[in-house]
Amino acid sequence: MSIYQRILTCLLLLLTTACLFVLSNQISIPASLQTPKPYPDPNITAQPAPTFYPYPFPLQKPLEAVITSSPTPSPTPTSLPERTEIHFENLGLVWRDCELPRPHYQSQEDCLGVTKKETFEDGESPFGEHFLPPGALMQGWRLFIGNDVYEALHQPYMVKAFSDPDDWLEYKLFKNGQILITRKSKLTGYDPNAGLLNINGKYAWEFANPYQATVIYDDVDLRQQYGLEAVYRPYVINGKMIFVARDNGKMFVVVDGKSIGPEFDEIEIGYCCETVGIYRYPGQYWFWGSRESRNFVVVITALSLTPAIQ
Image (cartoon, rainbow, N blue to C red; front, side):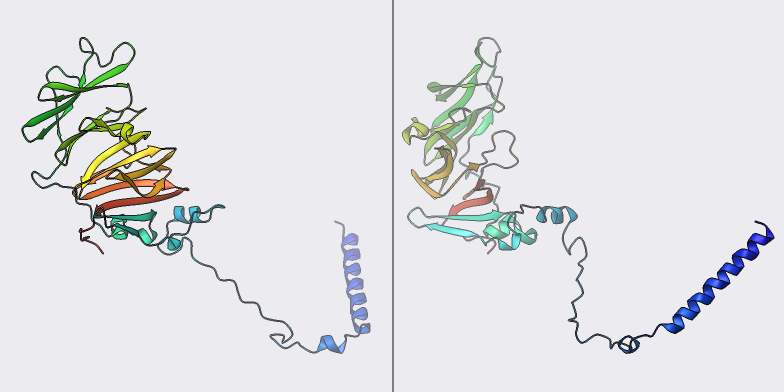
């Protein structure tokens, strides 16, 4: 830039400043604007400052916070009721259930008021024992009742074949070496020979055919006797036979030939790959079920049982 251009630029800046000074002296400022406003302005309603909470909330994991803020959240844990108890005086049994998940990391046992007793005393267990018959391909069940010996086992087909050419597996129930019952099942992901129990001095054979699971009790097929679609996991508490049944798309508990408690859309049986199943402990019958998209844990005990947790 030449010296003449610099001189011209300076003159233009001086002229602009002088014009602004003259104009400012000619403009009058209203008195209302010259008086400073009080603070805070009494005509303005003060708004409370927003409160910000730490994230995640105290005792809350980030994943849980994401879940509870979803568009269709499940009921908040604090809204879950305490356990439900149903006393069946005529059966001498108590039904206890709790909705899951429990709030504040409460354990299922705390909610139900019952501690799992997983170990049977000597001679107390009603269950038979596993054994491997000579030449067998799978373990069988053996049960002693008085002087009688019951054995439920898979019968190999021809020479060391699990099933016949049509994929049918054959199972037999023996009493003192004599065949009582023969049943067949298609190949499945678990062994349908599911158990042999002593219930009130009589044998109960659980044969879990995936199409028509049943229990044969003292030569009687309980599925056929009660007109049910399926029967699962027999047990005995207080001298009363208990099992889970399926019929008309619902699952429920049967005790002493009568349905008790609410129905479920699904009850986890635990034959193969479920994370939970039906657990039969001394004087306790545990299971997990769902209905109307709500999950529950249930335990049935003798009415005279005094829970370890109250």
